[in-house]
Image 1 (cartoon, rainbow, N blue to C red):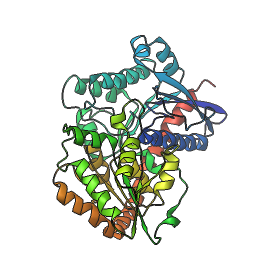
Image 2: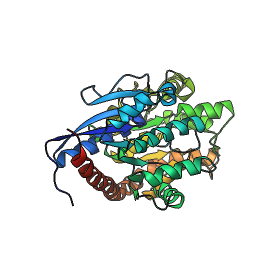
Image 3: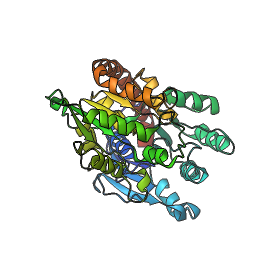
Length: 399
């Protein structure tokens, strides 16, 4: 094992992260990944200097300029890549988190090409490329499979955040340096408010996904949920609102001024109008504030995965409403069975599952407690890999 590399600055490019995304899941990944990387670098005697490289989000910044520089990627900067190549080439290493789940073919070729080109730029410039823990794939057709394989074979390390992604990775690129870890947002810092649980009224949080609500109400249902999401959420909130021992908290975890159909805030506003007794929790300033509030809840039903991770890692009983394999992959890795699946439950059965969950909170907390040791071990696998990669990059650093 390499020793300390003292007295140097390590320039770390954070590719496809964000410090001002309205999707607090991406923000949670960014803040948590910075915290993990900073600690590992400092243990090696290195001073980390972060540059966030990602899309031009329109939200307010929750990462201070003195914590990280920001370089915004757009179509022009990829078509004429000279400036982007220079920014990437100036880094000592790249941590690419792929916005959590965007290194896949499910979002279309343009988004995939953005993801792929930036990785290729790191490799062309000879900058060590580490794919931080993320969902890998699916890659169901060409040219996605060949392009993904090319990148993963050449990356210094590829970290999968669940066992399904790890299987995809090892089958598609068996020669890649592959490591299974877990979502870094489990390590997101927060203020523990669990003392607010267990009051006269149970604090039941509901995160209505604006995305899933739009898909259900439009009739498209592109995620092919068996239960009618819009009907399910209204019936669940209605059932909770009639109970004298329950206080309903409507929370948003992904907001968007550009795409109102992918805006939890608008969904929460609508539900607050339909159910006047519910508490419309104001939109959070950032991911840490969201997790802190979620830690105060007795129970959470959520359609956004990182709202679920915030609950899980703060000890709040949670039922994730799955809409893709990233849910089943992650929570399956943790042996957490309190998941509303994409298929297998109609609306009536799903409603009974959510309502019953309120009484099964002790079982959920026990399952969460059992999983936390595994989560820490999987996070340590990532820390260990960063330690190796940073030690090498630190020795080669120019400053």
